[in-house]
View 1: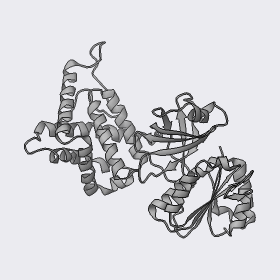
View 2: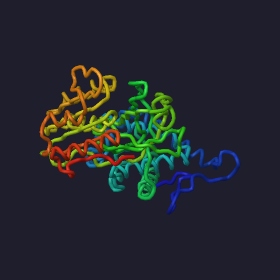
View 3: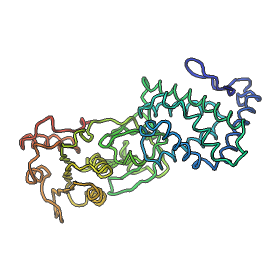
Length: 401
């Protein structure tokens, strides 16, 4: 296999380029060969129908050869095709920038390792990629130099991806993400939707820590809503008590196009494996986010277990996401949303404290119970559930921060 200049990969980390002068640091002959390879990749990609067409054929080939590989990745078919197309475009555009290429492939390797993908599962990608290129071209257009360019480029990328996956064992990966939507639902609360640039695994009910550029030393946890089996968008509901801090930045000074960073998803407040266990979910304010994710999973999988969500708020104005929650519950087989309004006119909803509504609604000792919201609310609700006969091992919530 031909080695590209500036890209030999020794035991620990590849030298990025051959330093020969104080200019761009690249040997002119090496630079010319990289640009020649880059032109071959770009030209063949155009002849093959463009990144999206090639990615559709590549995904189809991988589904036949390595179905477990794609099943491990988040997102549905359309999302995965789009991610493959973006990755292919990025690879071609950055081939003449070895430092960028090595770093990016390493981060991809760390992300894939977090998804549970093993290096052996990626070995056939190069051959599948060359075949996806060839079958998209008219007769006689596929050339040996195209084949060599793609296979050699993938071999380098594969090695850096594997190295990045190995490094994830001692350097936890982080995900850069772009803000794709920002909705101010209340003066102190925003719904922020993010799209990570690399595949980010998470399960409904989990949370991740968020970093904003203004405060690089602070990582604050937020529950994640979204549909990881369908697309690559992550939804946050952020309430800011002040205009400072990570929450203040996300609510008051974040715009579409801004970037944030996310940690690996954490938390065990996910759907029980036993489908016979019915669910009781009790939320206060933005604590409703993980339960929105759980309801979405129930709806999308056609899960037949019963799920009741009590959402306790101070007044009607705090029901900022009730329409979306009601729509998701309607799509699920057996889901119910019960808003509970503590003060003022409750409108069509239950009045009083959420614990009182839970006690009046039914008997819950046979349910798995999930709690989320302010720490004092979670503690008080746990006590009330014990008094209602719910065993402590059936009550689940994330540790308070």
